[in-house]
Length: 160
Image (cartoon, rainbow, N blue to C red; front, side):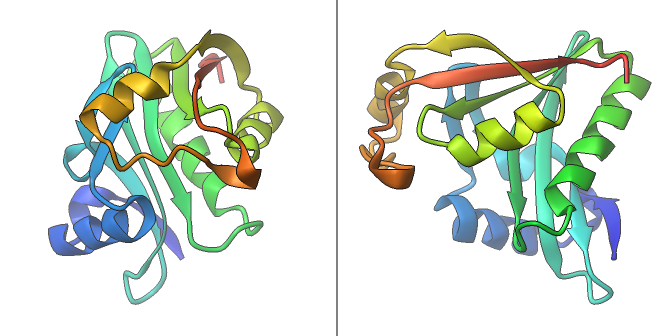
């Protein structure tokens, strides 16, 4: 098992991964509209180069924003390792902050990131309604039957 830049993978494999896990490669959040297959990122792969996890990010000035994070097998440290690799890369690039956005229903992500030192810094009320205007397939109800309405921005200082 190893972590590699996603540019080292076949583009079709990356596209298929996003379609399986997100429905498309497009991510619509308040910080922008992203084609995740075109972003920088890292993949956790096995010996056959099969993706077991994938993270994408964008760097703007001194801020690194994690756009997507997926792990095929929960509880094995794949997501944690991918976040650590992004944090290290961001630090090497001179970033002073790492941010991300998740939705109010994603309690798993909120728990995951807070355990790793991220703090809630902003609640963007009804932001998902704006995203739905562009991407209507975003569901109304999310994890645990919670209505998906708000975006929550988390951040961590990158003095790692």
